[in-house]
Amino acid sequence: MRLITVAGPPSCGKTSVVAKACGVLQGNGQACAVVKFDCLQSRDGDLYRAAGVPVSVAFSGGLCPDHFFATNLEEAFAWGVESGAQVGLIETAGLCNRCSPHIRGALAVCVIDNLMGIDAPEKIGPMLRMADIVIVTKGDLVSQAEREVYRYRIRQMNKRAVIRHVNGLTGQGCAELAAIMAKAPDIDSVTDMRLRFSMPAAVCSYCLSETRIGGRYQKGNVKKAKFAGGVHAE
Amino acid sequence: MLSEDAGLDVPESPDSPDSPESQSENRIYAPASMTLTAGRDKSSRPEAGDVVFRSGEITALLGPTGSGKSRFLSDIESLACGDTPTGRTLLLDGRAPDADERFELQGRLVAQLTQNMNFVLDMNVRDFVLAHAMSREVADPEAAARRVLDAANALAGEPFGPGAQLTQLSGGQSRALMIADTALLSWSPVLLIDEIENAGVDKRRALDLLLASDKIIVIATHDPVLALSADRRLVFEHGAVRAVQARTGAEEAILTRLEHMEVEISRVRAMLRAGETLD
Image (tube, rainbow over all chains, first blue to last red; front, side, top):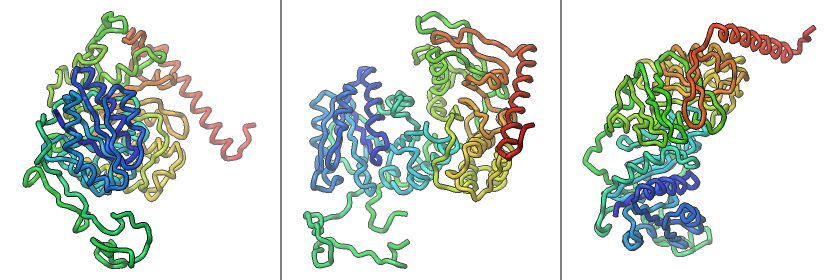
């Protein structure tokens, strides 16, 4: 199965773009399947089903969504293969912007929108920097000048990526995206493949559902920031 | 910057090279002509003929909703190669671009001036235009940014300074800056204009500025002055170009009359705004 990871901040249009691109792929006779990783709730399953794309939604619930994603990749891949998909897409809900779900050897797509502010490409970090394709949505809501300056900021953060503007509502640009997706690496198994960027270290008392604030409740992997002049205060 | 323990960054190769796409992003590309070959209408009947566009020439698209204007523009934007419902093919300088060229130009061939009247980025005018100039790797970005600002102020009814926030510009000021920036800094060789409103922008000067940019200009409009300003008009019907009309001498006279009326309307508007009576 050809494997594609799709990441991006919440509400940037990932689901619309992926559903439209899958529509093009399926129209060309290529079966698709989508696994959506989300945190607490999501209506995206309905959106994919409405678009005629087989979908499976997984919620991380009380766990770190990044770790949950990594620990369920084999099963997600197996489900895609079982459902007969030739192209399998894994969409993640932006996780926490700290991480990147992208895998070495699979096609990595980052979706961001034109309304996020000029520093967004820098703030988004690894999921954009490590992507092979950056899809920019909502370009119809800004000026040509803003699109071009925003594109430049993306290029500064990622020298290699193919950058494309896609309109998630009208589907404009989705045929071009689908053509790239159709050439994603064909993979037998994700076992022993590697993430492009490591997940955050964890296991402190808050990982174990602590809700109280205060030093006396903090155990495990705790890091204290230095405020005003410290290395983390820039 | 990433903080020290942000994570393990694993590049694909020791020094990830720039993609061919990013290397070519600032190479100037200015085809002298662009051709959209004849396709077929909604009933699969063949279109009358090819349409050739030349730089420095304005073409207006006219026709009711659903007549095929958007499809025509989308055939240009997507660099159609017989793969769209209309069956048209886009030629640049008389030649169909190969797969690599098409891939490079996708999404960048056409710059668009839409009816959008507001900026959304939280930057001031100078930083914004300077960032755009730097992205184009022009020799003197500061000077280029000043030229854009001067041109924008020449179009806008009310001047604005380099320190103004983009989001606080008036509709007319925003439009003037968008037009000046597109004319002087946009990479794209083809410019699509979706109306230029009267509000606070000198339409004639705007068109002159855009024409001087040597771009291929296409206007989708219902405004009679803009439509008549075009060297020729494509009239759409049932998904295809039905007629190509060049501006006649009589039409030129009508254009002059309409332009005078617009000047008069602007003059009266300015007087009323200044609290003057019209007696």
